Each structure stands twice: as C-alpha cells, then as structure tokens.
Length: 344
View (cartoon, rainbow, N blue to C red):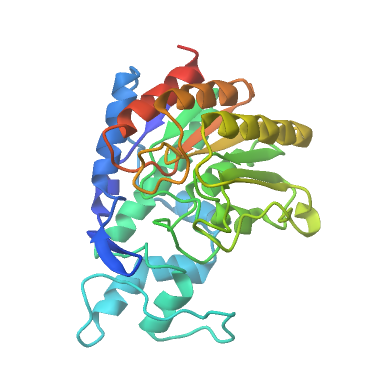
C-alpha cells in the first residue's frame, strides 16, 4: 500500500474557529497529521510525498468537481481580504445568503459569505497552498490505484467531504474524496464513495447528486441533531441520472460500535447493488467516544472491525482521510483501522 502526505499541508494552520459563539483553538491543524502519521507508523506503514503539490493536471481535475469562480476565490481571497480597511489576518465570514442568494457579489465580504457556509474554515495567507497539497495527496493515491496498486491511502488535512461545488464548510475546502473518484473515473466506469465519518459528507453528496456514474453512501450522526444539520437525511436519494445513487444512513447520537457496524453492513449491501468497479473510502475516525467532536461512542477496537468490513469489499480502493481530531486515542484508532483493513 502506498501512503501519501505532502509537507506543504502544514501551511494551512488556522489558529481558531468559532464554536457555539466562542473562538476556540482549532482541532484541525498540523498536529492532526503528526498523530495520524504516528498511527501509521505503529501499523508499520510509512508516508511518501506526492511528486508535486500543485500542477495543471490537478487544477483541471479539480475543475470537474468545483466551479471556476470557487477555485479562483480560494486562491485569491486572502489577498483581496487584506486590502480591506482594518481587515484581520484571517478570512472569515460575517454574512451569509440564507434562504438562497439571487446575486453573486463582487465585494470580498460578500464573496466570503457566499463561498463559506459556516465559521469553521478560516483562511490565513498560507492556507491555499496547504489546501492544494491535501488534494494532491488524494490525487496521488488514486493515481497509484490506476497504476495497479489495489489500495492506497491519502493523509488529507484539511479534510474535504463538506466541500461542495462552490462552498467550503466544516474545515473542508476542496473535496478530496470527490477528486479521488474523479481520477478513478478516468479508468473505471462506475465508482463508489463510501463515507464512514461521524458527519454526513454533504459536499460529496452535492457534487454527485445528479450523476449516476459515482455512487455516494454515507453513515453518520442524524443531521436533525448534529452537524451539518441541513443535509444527510435518509430521503435524499439523488435526482435525475443520480436517482438511487445516493444513500444516507443516519444513526442516533450516542450510537455504539455494534450499531455502527450493523449499519455499515447495510450500506455495503447497497453499494454492492450498484456494482462499482472501484471504491473511495472517506475515512473518518471521529466516531470514537473521546473525539473532541464526539457524537458516537465507538471504541478503538471497533475501527479494526470497520477496516476489515471495508477490505472485504474486495475492490480497488482509495482511502482518503477525513475527520478524527487530536486526542491520545487518534493514533491508535488509525493503527487499529489499518490493522483490520490489512488483515493483521
């Protein structure tokens, strides 16, 4: 298995984000990568760097899942923001087009409100290169599978599954899992994204909701009570060509490992009905009971069983890291997952 992480990802290091009205230390920083890398080392696995953190080919592939104006926004907004009188060093929204906006703004404050649907995606001057480098890891992992590896892993931080065609949210800017699926589609006619993060992958759903060539399935905490709140219901099944190719299995808050694995088995059965040729796993570890954003009560040993279930699908697979935030358990949780996935 090849595993990818680019050191430029450390350049995205937001100091705080807004939680319940308070500015608190952001759990989505470079320390996450250190803990996840330690977990891989405990499993006897080593990371390598993609050959590049940015390229014309990466930009072209990103343009298949994100709008041109959104990609331009991510690249240029910090400089435009800093030109405003008395602007902070951190880009963050203070207005949103709630209810649906009818006019795309020109002013930087309006653009930030349009393209960031929450307060969890502050950007610094160095954020964009770090965000691109995270996407480059997902691209490299998918390319490794196209080249013949059965499985590859990308340590993506910032994560990606809340990023839609032109909106950031939930620490996510570019949708790494959707990018990996886009690369796989260059060789495979039917690709599936299976999301086992605690939170619903609303950005991934949004990107593929009208498409039938990429199946999306998500197992997550019930959005009636948990982030992202507005997407992820069981009734959301896709539209047009995508009808039936989107599956959501929301679980009650506090669900344990047994409930999680039972629903994972159901989701895998739905995936099998689609008959994909390759799979992207949006790998969240934030379902652990001690995660800072905890909503489920999984134990470390449960991730071994999750890994084993996903390996049993038996298809070429790209593992894309999503959530899982700093605790003393994070390294062990990834090591446990990898042990189960590899059948150790």
